[in-house]
Length: 626
Image (cartoon, rainbow, N blue to C red; front, side, top):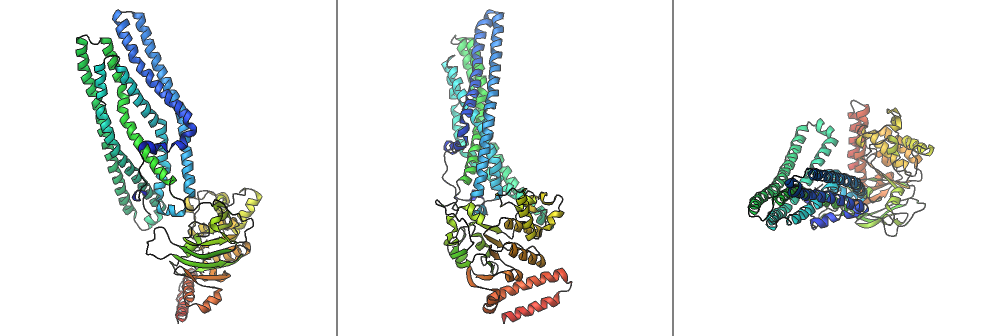
């Protein structure tokens, strides 16, 4: 699995074009966002009116000693301040709600996209990278829309309006202020190039760090069992230090732009003070105008200094947008057909017609993992797939439900190519049970009835289906849980044993009542006796259901109607167990290895000195080879 930062990137858009991609989510709330921006601009303009009032006070009532007029001037300043505060309040009220709605829409669309992207996408992406995009990046986008974008635009406009007002007092003083901004624009251009790269690097490293935390939490039992906690800590420390170094480089870039944003206004103040005193001494400007000029320049200091922060914020938001849209833009080649076919009453005839398959990252010279599979599973038949490790059994089971698509040939259900069915219909017709049983942080009931969205889980029918599925899977242990079927299962079902998780996963597949069930050794964690009972119940309840089963035990093979031998990515023999035992040496070798494993398990469970039984199996192995 590779980090997305290591893959070839798409052509980089300019910052405005990249951020404009958010428009599709923001369009419904644009009116309120626009009103919020107007109120923010109104607040800024109101603050710029205060120096004008102060000019009138200094040049009029204060110089003439009219006390009553001074009071009215103070009231005017207070009124402007209150009006500015009201505008700030309205800005927050207008913007915060819509911004959180945009965040909700992006997060919901992102999750929906993750659900629809193929398994091959998730094979390539680290879960921590996806999690950091889902949580951190989308939240950052919301904060930027509600705060950064509005104030960046308003503060730039405030500086422009304020600079224009400075010219009414004296053009030379105003020119000093304007020229001091030239170095700021140059530094801003350099800052964007450096900070954008560092921001992307930092956010990718945060994703890698999240992946390490997730892996350590999920693998805590393994780390403790092997005493590898210190090793995991050292690995995490290296990644955290790398992220810290990147953050320090970001901080350095911000510090440099902040230096110019603070230094240049101070330099402009000093130059304007010297020039203003000289101009006043020669009668070119009055004291009231000079006082108003410096009052206006003081008000403009925060908008100027904040531009660096909001510029950095915008770069962060741009990078977050890029990272989120990398998932939206990911290619999905497993989609619904333009003209889907409907199977009203599927019989369950499953056929592999010259099926080839290779993974996307396979080398050009590597052979196909599956190289021309021809196999028919008749309606209502149970067909077992056997083969040595690496022969392609698990991969074969992923093709009927289109977890992966064939790279050659086709898979059909009742004569219809599975690619011509809607995915939701296909996965209602075909259910899967995997060796690696995955459960969710929900109740036993909700986990088992996950595939039955047509049922009310707590209705009498839902209760009947639930109990039948649990009985088939020999999962009566759920009644001994603290709250029975309402017991909440911990994350990934780790509060249960491996056998219990597999039985609940199998019950989930049974409850779906599919026309075809595909099982990839779903009972590997069960003892042989429990597996035999489960197999017996499966044949009873799923009578008429087509079953394709990857088998690793002789007991599973014996219960199948027919067996297919998979060897080197090809089906080399198909027949009943007895027929293949009589005709295929490779099949006998595979079954002998199954029998030896089964005998070892039985001996381990029942006989403290099992050498006699193992000797018998060894003799059978030798006879089979002969």
